[in-house]
Image 1: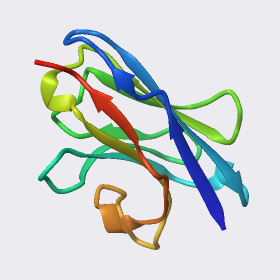
Image 2: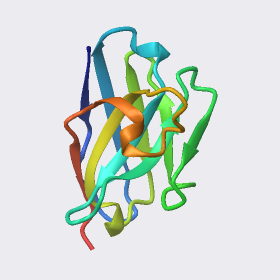
Image 3: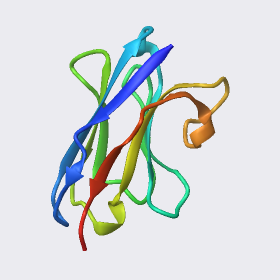
Length: 125
C-alpha cells in the first residue's frame, strides 16, 4: 500500500507562483509513474501533469503548458509541481496520483491506483 500526502497549497496572487509537493510512503515509490490532477468546485477532476518514474518523460494539459513544471524531488519519495504565472482559473484542489494501471496513459483519473487527499490552491480574481 502507498500513502500520498500533498503539501504546498495556499493562496497566491494572479501571476504568482506556488510549489506543490507530493510525498509518498509505503512501497518503492521511485518506480511509479506519477500524475497531478485538479478539481474545481462543480467540475470534474482534470489532468494537469504527468511524469514517468525515471523522470525522463513529462507531459501537461494544454491549460498549464509553459507555466507548470513537474519534477521528481531530490528525495526519491517526492514529486513536485512548480506552478508559475498562476491564474484565477487555476483555483482548485490539487491531487497527486501514483502507479498506473497497465496500458494506461496517465491522463485520466481512473488510470492510477493511489491518490492523495489533495491540497487547496486559491488564486483570487
